[in-house]
Length: 408
Image 1 (tube, rainbow, N blue to C red):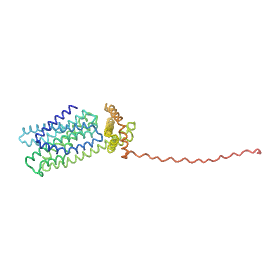
Image 2: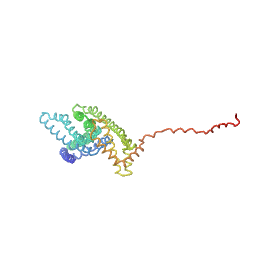
Image 3: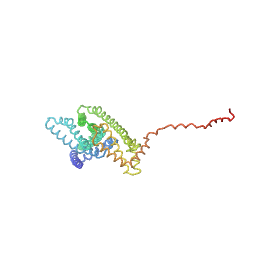
Image 4: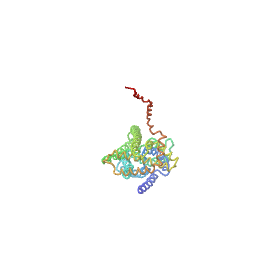
């Protein structure tokens, strides 16, 4: 961990200095301020997807830092070297620039960003519980990369405006900001999410060929989409608008639909798998619907904060995260089958159950109360009252006539 922090710090210092040298000090700070604007909405969107089964912030922050620092440094150095080499070997420098943007940049940049996903997949395998994690990690990595790249492009545009004395209406900075931060802030996340889908699908399979091939397939798709986007400006006067309207916007809409669907399926899996643990007594029956509802989780945190302060709210957050992780762990083990079950399943299950037991005294009442307030509990089954037993009427037994002594 210390090695990765040192690496990110060193590459961050180098890339920021390189960008400052290319943009100038004034351009650097203007670009930095403008590049920050699209970051919070993108981070919030990917965090929203991951909240169904939240993981530690450390992995997401690592991915963002890798994209903003290490991947950006690799890309700027490799792209510059390749472009200069092709310009020296070619008689037409403009052709070398076009070839670099279409053939070199997508390969270098998507590979550099995919390295973050590979590191998490290999060294934090438990955090890859499915496709949602692949999308979240890829989105954070690409958002960080786009942030640094936007500083470079916006800072350079600002320096160009200063040199030319451009008016605000004709500003290159405004045009660059509109294209990169307003029109297509999702471009880099969209490319890298394809790689994340490959890693997420690989986390759900036990076959080695698929586990190795799916991330590669996702990376190739990311490179191809990136190359198509970079080459759109070379497809004629309306090439950019055609690619944007016919490829990027539909792909972005498909990604949104997929993210919502994945989130809903994750919450349904939480409800289905945790019901087994509730039946075994590890969870209360009222907790399960609350753990499968995002509004109920938020309400439970608020209720716990009201009674126990921030420590209680953090306990509820950890409890819900552990419960969701337990549900996804059991779903993965059940789908894998007994013959291919992860040997660490039992150990991981015991660890999560122990952590749930430690936090249950604080979290369970809040979740049960939230389930009641959100009207998530099924109504009690109505049973018709039993019919009253018929009244017994006491009829005196008939008297047996006595035999008369005078009877013959």
